[in-house]
Amino acid sequence: MHPTIGGALRVSAALAALAALATGCSKDSHTDSAGKSSAKPTSPSSSHPGLGDIFVGGKAVTGSTPTGNTKVPYQRTYSDGSLYASVTGYRSMLYGNAGLEALYDDVLAPGASGTASGDVVTTIDPAAQKAAFDALGDRQGAAVALDAESGKLLAMVSTPSYDPATFSGGQPKDAEAWKTTNAHGGSPMLNRVLHRADAPGATFSVVVAAAALEQGLYTTVDGATSSPLTYVLPATQTSVTGTSPQCKNASIKLALRYSCDNVFTKMAADLGSAQLSSMAAKFGFNDGTLKVPLPVSESSYPEAGLSSSETALTGIGGGEVRATPLEMARIAAVIANGGRLLTPQLVERVTNADGSTQHPNATASGGHAEQVISRGTADALQSALKMTESKISGKTGWVTNTLSDSATSWFTGYADRTDGRRIAVAVCIEGLPSSAGDGSGSEQAVQVAEEILTSVA
Image (cartoon, rainbow, N blue to C red):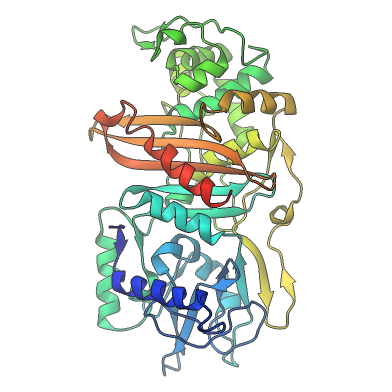
């Protein structure tokens, strides 16, 4: 059972109605999260009474119905509300709005005429979104997919989710649903893709490897590194041992494949915190201004004051390194995109009632990309990240929380589409038993990524 807070029966009804649409029963009806047809157009740029809509894959995933209340004349309805909650946000008669509903309130809210000024068209691919949502299932985590060439977000899922339709009205039942949603221990209203900044574990070693190649510490991903199997952190008695005998003096390619902590802790110490901080910044860390256009929590690498031993631990995403799933997808996109960094974008365009359109950011249409690492380094890391017996190129991570005896499974990587484009993904699954790090647990994020990438292949 999926961890959706409220509205399970309503979501099932919406899915049944959408199936009917697919068979050609109606081409113009709009289905809300209560399974009711509101007969609204499902194409952007058409003027209609009520709230403007948010579109996914050419279809409105929102609607509205008259309330009879002059102060709030329309109530928001949602199709598959829990599936798209992390994309749309919510609009409530009692509690205001959030997400795209808030950011584009001036477009979506009806004016004095009772008609909204436009609709918001997202970049989300409905197949990728559903694949990510279903693959995460009842687990707590996040999954994001983006087009590495254009920066368009194709999937953005945070679980557990919630159905914004359950508290969009002004009745006592809406207040109760709001209370239940906010009291849930899994924080369903937290968009983990954009705002869960936590230790990324060994997935951060991709950044370390890029720094080593860019700075000339190593000139190839295939040559041996200088890495004892058991590496003692500088000025400490703390040691880090590789997971396999092959980790001794392993090449960057082997070290990425076998998660050789001994290699990347020593590599980080050899590079120094200044070099790593600079490289992390190029990939997008320590930037509190990122918007997609929703604001994104800052991913961070310590900019000063690290000892050599502390720097070594950052080599495997430890210490004070923090990253959102979106940031880890951006790292994969840089490698896949020849070393170029693009700004991810969730909104394709805003379509006005008069038929005109506005694009919120040029990069969403293939605009300027910043070259943050050389093409040679990117190509070398592409070959290093190629996973055996898989069409995916990427890196896994496993982060243990000793205080709660739980762990987080991470994956970041990319795959080629049949049309030649590359799709970057990042997945994190929280709250796993720490004892599951023997392989079954650490592969969970990979399995979710595979489901997403298969859906857009």
